[in-house]
Amino acid sequence: MATVNQEGLLNVKATKIGKDTFLSQVIKMVEDCLWSKVPIQEFADRITSYFVPIVLGIAGITFISWLLFPNTLHPVTVWASLFLPWVNPGLGVITSAIFAGVAVLVIACPCALVAGNTYCSNGGKRNRCGKRDSNKAGRRNTRREQKVYR
Figure 1 (spheres, rainbow, N blue to C red):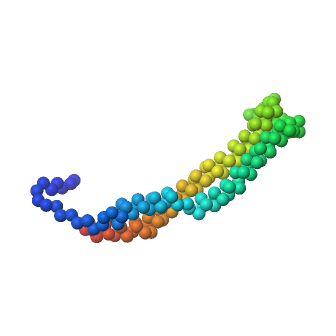
Figure 2: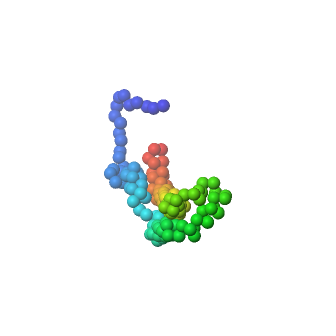
Figure 3: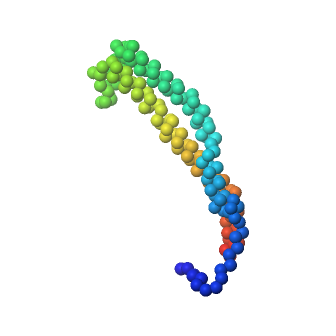
């Protein structure tokens, strides 16, 4: 239900304008949360700066090892094919080397870097924004709104 003012004057008083309004404060808090780094993200960035080169190095060493020592590593493929149906011991040397190198990257990188870092940083931003909103602007503005609209 609503009321329509068809006749007469409507007297409105603006108590805040521009940057002092509640909406402006909410926009500023959201921008601050989006552009700032939370501590867990800084920690993840520091770990990633060491982890990624190490994983790439291990993948490269794995690839080169499978190229240089195929006869030594072939028994590993035969052994793995006994209980892993997707392992094919009949592949060529280069194909086995590529599979081994890519396997290191697939197993090591996506889980730790993409999924984990994204989840932690987004969750941290949500928590930080929520705390900031409820502790500062949220309570204060709720009281003001109750005073204004009573």
